[in-house]
Image (cartoon, rainbow, N blue to C red; front, top):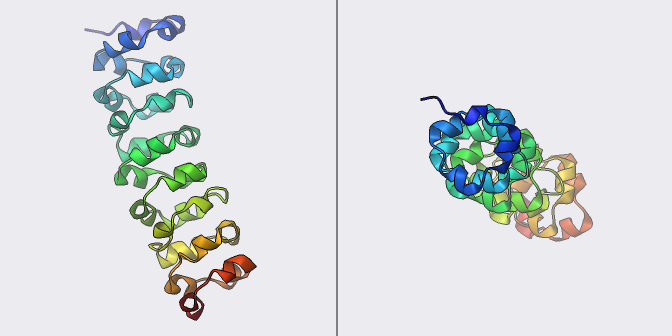
Length: 215
């Protein structure tokens, strides 16, 4: 039986209550057009079931507005595989709350692209665990913006690989706090380039331990 959902006007879609949305079958949800999904608000998105979210393709998911994306509760986010996470728009990922970012699985975090990571703010970056940061590609580490790099936890800094450390720009190094600089291991400091060393401020240099300087 063909779903009648696709024939609903934008005005009708906009007027649908969360209770009505909750009564949709998965087939009804899959029949929604991208134009219809653009109209969905946060409460309407939140009313969907995990299997409904799983049934949406990348184009449909990409149509969800940045305000409605807040309706993706952890149990709904769990229904998205890494490929679908990576296909979300940069502005959609940037609109995720820190709670939503923290709810992503390691595989989903690995699905994020460098462009998506570039749009994450300090609170969002700070919500990503050290083990997940360790799985960032070199380009993804380089993509963390200077306003967000200051929220990178010391336990995440300590597990960065030599190639990840090498990808940190002078501007990223400058934006780090002295406490963060003290979180690098002696081995990591030993891999700093002349440009990275030159970017250190007096306060950052003052935070270095004898072991780090030896490195």
